[in-house]
Amino acid sequence: MNNNVIEFEKWKESNEELLMMQSESIKTIIPVVFVYGDDTGELFGTLKLFGTEELASIEVLRREIKEQEEAIMKGFNKYGDEIEDDEINPWGEDEFIVCKEGIFHWDWKLEDYEYFGQVEGFVKKKVVTMLKDVVIYYGVEHIHLYRGASYHVSGEYIAYDNEMQPLVMLSISPEGCIPIAVPYEKEKLTIFEADFAVMNLLSMEEI
Image 1 (cartoon, rainbow, N blue to C red):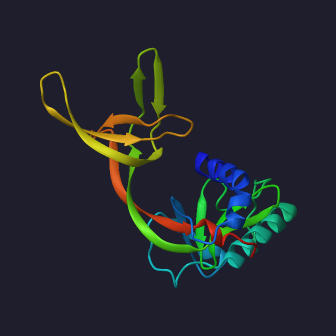
Image 2 (cartoon, rainbow, N blue to C red; image 1 turned 90 degrees about the vertical axis):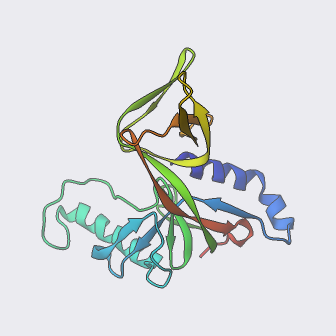
């Protein structure tokens, strides 16, 4: 379970009474994966919204889990191919997912997709993906940013090196770490836009 989900769970538990008492909406912006596909063999996820009508139903994802469980028991999938997996691979294990019915996350205790709320809008935000391993030093401390890892950009500013040349600095927050600044170097990282979901925390209910 990633840091976004853990922090959200802690917030929900500590503010349960407040949520019940509030009459106005409380909205937050969260990173999500949009899941598309009409059948279990067609499912795919993306960080960009392609439209809401085409989103997959959560029931398709639940049906996929049952197919995985049956395949593990039999030793081969529905196409007759042998498999070596001994555990299911659900969507939303490390992130929030968006389906037709709303926002979900996989809960291993429930062994099901847990409903979190409805999407009330979308906001584009910048995301950084590392192309190479990078180590950031802060005195005696150091932070590893690994190749292939992605981080949300919370801010950017201009700094100057020792030769007074301008540098674009990006503020990111690696999991379990305070926000740090990394220089934008196109050979080390790439930037793209992702669609974040706006969610009303008061819309949380069972589905």
